[in-house]
Every structure is written in C-alpha cells, then in structure tokens.
Amino acid sequence: MAEPKSASTNPESLSAAGGAGALPAPAAVHGNRCRCAACRIAMHVADSPKPSVCPYCQAKMTVAPYVLPPATAVAPEAGDDVAAKLRRLYARPRHGMMLALFLLGTGLLATAVYFQVSNFESYWYAPLVNLYSLIAGIFIVSRFLLAAFYHAPADTGFEPTVTVIVPCRNEQNAIGRTIDHIYSEGYPLRKKEVVVVNDGSTDQTLAEMLKAQARHPTLVIVDFETNRGLCHGMAVATLMARGEFLVFVDSDTFLFPGAVRKVVQGFVDPMVGGIAGHTDVENATKNLLTKMQDVRYFFSYKIMKAAESVFGAVSCLPGCFSAYRRTCVMHVLDRWLNSKFMGVYGDFGDDRSMTNFIFKDYRILYDDEALATTLAPENWSQYIRQQARWNRSYVREVFVAGRFMWRKHPVPALSWYAMMIMPIIEPVVIVSAMIIAPIQSGSMTPSYVIGVMAITLVWSLHFLQHTGRKHWWTGFLFTITYTLFFSWQAYYALLTMRRTKWGTR
Image (cartoon, rainbow, N blue to C red):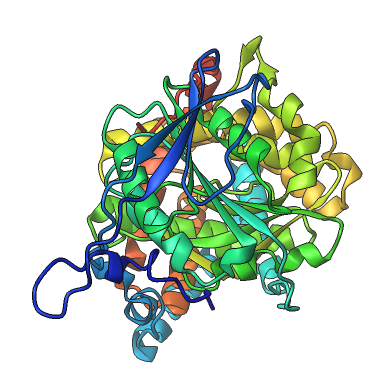
C-alpha cells in the first residue's frame, strides 16, 4: 500500500477552493529548473534532489526557480475503477458457447491434420507451402504446450528501490493520467522514484507534466528542448536513476495497483536481468481495430511470452511495461545507445534492442500477475506506422540475437531460428497458396488455408476462455489483415531500415 500523503501533496486538499468549510489556499510551490545550454536539456525538480551536472556532458548546470501551477485534483477517468476494469477485462464466458466453439475448433484442427497426412504426395508439387504449413502449425502448438508449464515468479516480499521511467513525446492527453497511476499503484513512496522525459514535444505535454508535478512534488521532469529520440529518453533517465531496478512505462500505459511490486519479484534470482509485465489494451472497445489488437496482445503475452519465460528466454521486454536490473542496463548503455545497423544509429530498436543486449548474459522473464493497460492505435494510419517501426526493430534484432541464441537452451534456440526464417518466406508462401495455386489448380492450397483458420480459431478461443471478452472473433480480422498486408512489412522494414522516428507520433 502507498504511504499516506501529507496535506501538501494530497490532490484533494490542494484543490479545495473557497466556500463553507474550505481549506485555505496553499502557498505557491517552487521548483528548480536545472539546465545545460550545451546539451539543450533541462530538469525540473521540486521535492527531489537538484542535479548539479548534466548527465551527458557533466558540465555544471544553471539553476533557476519556477513556480508550479496550482495543484488540482484529477477528475477520475471512467476506466480508473480497478474492480470494474478487472470485471471488464476478465469474465467467464458462457459454457454452451465455449463448447460449440471448441467442437468447431477441434474439427478444423482435425481437418488440417487430415490434409497434411492424406495428401503427403502434394509435398512434391508444393513443397514450400506444405512444409511451411507443417512447421508453422508445430510452432504454434508448441507455444500452447510450453505455456501450460508457465508459472509467474513467486511473491517473496522483495521490496528494492525502483525508478519508474516514462519517455514521452506528444502525449498531452494521457501523460497526466499515466503519472497519477504510477503514484497511486501502491509501492512505498520512500522506495519509488519517478522520472518522466519530454522528448521535444510540440504540444502541451510539458505543461501536463508540470501539472502532475504540482500533485506529486517528488516527480522529476527531464525536458529535451529538441527531439532526440526514444532511446535517448530512456538513456538519460537511466543515468539519473537512483533506484536499484528500472521500470519502464509508456506514456499511455496505466499501472494496476501492486504492479511495480509484482514485476520486481523475479529479480530475487541474480541471473534475471529483465522482466516483462502483462499489458492489456485499455481502449479495446473503441472500434474493430482496437478490439483486434486486444486479442493479439493477449496471445502475444499469455502464450508467446509465457512459453518463452519457461526457459527464461523472453525475446522482447515491451516498452509499455517492463523492468530491468539497473546494473545490467548501465553495463550495456553506451553500446546500446551508440549501436548502428547498416551504418546508421538505430533509435527504433529501443525495447527489443535493449532486451538482446541483456539477454546475452542473463535470463529474461514474464510476470502475468503484474498488470497494466495501454492505449492502442485507434486508426489504421497510426497502426501501420507503429507496425512498420516494430517490424524494423524485429528484423534487425532477430538476426542480432541469432548470433548467440545457439548457446541457450535448445528449445528456445530452435524457436528463435524458426522465427528468423518464417517471416522472410511467409509472403512467398501466401502468394503460392492463395494466388499461384488457384491459377494452376483452380483452388487455394487446402492444408494452408484450413491450417491458418484452425490456428486463428484456437488462439481466439483461448482469449475468450480466459477473458470472456465477446470480441474474440476479431482475431480473424488480425489474420486477414496480416495475410493480405502486414506480412509484407518484413520486406518494407528492410528497405526502410534507416528510418529512426518514433513511428506512432
């Protein structure tokens, strides 16, 4: 539980404004703006220690006082009722519907297996499509089997010092709520430091951060006067951090109570370098696109990351909510920040790149009991830009990790090399199965089509079984859009590897 706030930091007391029984207006709260002119970076602190030198060039910083805006209570958001949110996110589906859909899924899987076995001679005529279908099917089934052995790290009462870091650019509508959730999630304030980084935003993000600082005077604000990139936002906060562990949170991610405490429990094992929390989509009910992403998020965490965590081999610690051992990050920080790909500094790698640097020598886990929600793109143009950035990061880092994965346990190693190859050849398989085959034989390759539908139904039903969310069927929308469009982004990623923008701004 969070420690009680004093009257000077309590939003309700600070927001009292006149009327019978109202508290007297609080005195103005002053902060200090510490600035390095050479690096064009400033730090706003109120009740936190003043930095004396620039974290980059180590030059002495100029200090100027400023007055924080009046602290006001934050109007509760519709999604901030924790109990209601949990009921919305996790409910029991109807047993009759689950049984009917289970029988349908079983029938599709049986049909797919039948085509694979009975049409063995077809491997001679369409070896790539049939072999790919077989390997992809085995891969997905193996993820479900391994995920069945997953257990979240035990809560041992471990309570180290942590620094929660929020890199941010142009998030004026969400950053205040994100900060409020971090301060109210319950970790002891004497052991929790919060650092937010404004990466040259062109909207009112900095102003919203200062309003949040009035509510939470221990908040540390780093302001890049010009855009420097996500990696620099992560790096500068790491250099300033005083906590033993770093918890990275996206500027539109909202932590559940107890999330910070739970996500650090796995660090009791000194060989664990990073841990991913579990993130659901906050705005899942907005439209078809967000519903589709909600199903995909759940599968990527509860199946993919859970399966990888069994071997301590989670392939990516998502930037929306993940924790690192600070000594591990500091050890690789310079190489990570200055890494190049194709001769260009790659600021698009961020979370996956950092994961690889640490994964080389440490175990990486997933904790499905450390909960958060995040805002997913609500329009297709933003979603496409996000996926392009993620694909550039994936294409680059999957080959980077391939250099050392053979030293790991053979099961995650084989999975990793399969993931290296499958996205590259998948577009060719799709064309062969859905375009060339109909031209040559008059029908699409049945084993491929039925297999894809069966696998989609299985993981969509898994989503329904564990969440009760009625938009489970939008998993098919993801499969369709991925097959027709997003599978080709691996090639686009290779052609645009030199782009280093945030991708969703």
